Image (cartoon, rainbow, N blue to C red; front, side):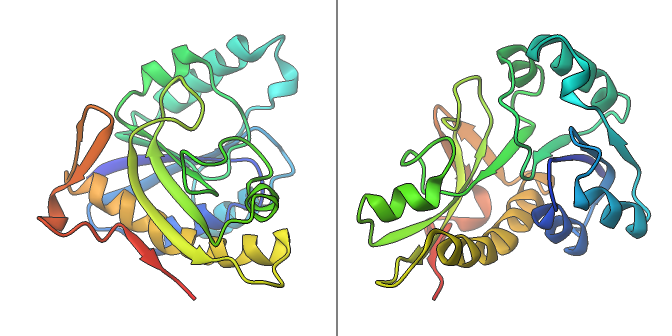
Length: 210
C-alpha cells in the first residue's frame, strides 16, 4: 500500500478526484493546506481524511515555512506527495527532499505558460489548443519531467473562465490516472522524459477532449 499526502490551497477539486478514484494499493493519509479557509479541507474532513493547516503567513520566510511543511508531511511517511492546486512556490530544498515522489498538476501544456494566468495567456497568444500537464516537481518552476498531458480545443468565443472549466474536467481524469500509474510502478524517469510502462509503444498520454 502506497501512502499519499495531498497539498491544496483552495477547493481541492483535483484532490477530490484522486480520493474518489479509489486507486488500488493507494491510501490518502492526509490533506494539508497553507490556508485555513481552503474549502477542500472541509470536504476532506467529511470524507474522513486527516487534515492539517500550516499557514505560510505564520513563518518569517519561504525556507522556514517549507521546513515546517516537510516535518508535517514526513510524519505521515508518504510514498508520494501530490500538489493539487497548492499555490506556493517551493524551495529547492523541499523539491530535492521529495525528488521522484512529488508531482504537480499545472493548467497549461508545458513548457508553454509556466506560472499563473495560464488560460488568459493562451487566449492572448492565439492558441488553438490548451490543456494541462502533470509533471514531477523539480527546483525549476514548472519544468520537471512530464508524466502526462491533456488537450482541449480553444473555441472562438472562449473566455479564460470557460477555458479553465473545460481544462479542469480533463485534470480530474488525468491526475488520478497519473497517481495510479505511479503507485503501480509504471513511471520511469530517464533524463527529462517519463516513460510509462503501461503504454508500451503507444503514447496516449495526450488526448483530445471536446
